[in-house]
Length: 232
Image (cartoon, rainbow, N blue to C red; front, side):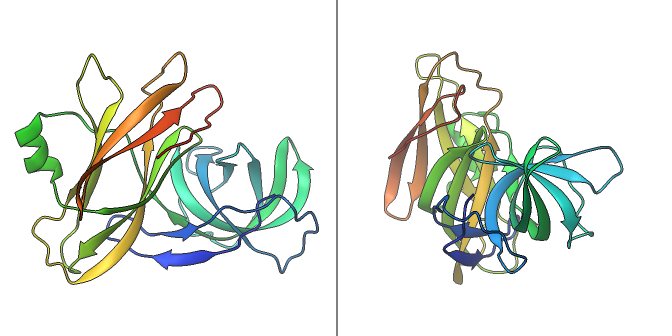
């Protein structure tokens, strides 16, 4: 199971979550004093209920047998950072039964419609960001990024899939600050659902980003059969 090594609080306007690094599968001794932190996809178990299950990016399934965040309202296919204690292995078809300590939603969206260069700039913005990491997990493109924030205006984050028959997997990561003042640096996470892509084999996604150092392109391989990815 994944044991947390590092957590760092990050804040945003439309998003609030935590950054963490890779963890090791070397901790089978569970204790109520141990707390893990993972990104997961949530699935409500029924309508009008706060009960939900979770799937981690490596496919591990979790069942919340106890929940210390009863206020949380789960939504289908919502990405979140979850803090939890492992109670047992192999519980009613799930890999682990857990106690949820806390939970924070991640901005979760589908790729946005390509409106053309000028309209994309107008609607989705072209304000710079710093890319900390891009990964694919559980069928989502997950982007860790930094941006400048003034504290008053809500920012707009999108992934635009460009209409290109020759290169159908070209995207642009877009940030609209709506002329917000650049007072402080902030960090955030956004997750984009890739289920509409449906490639038959492994493909390479290209993500163009306006960074503080100018335009950059990031590539990441997406294999829908394994959900594995590697990027630059």
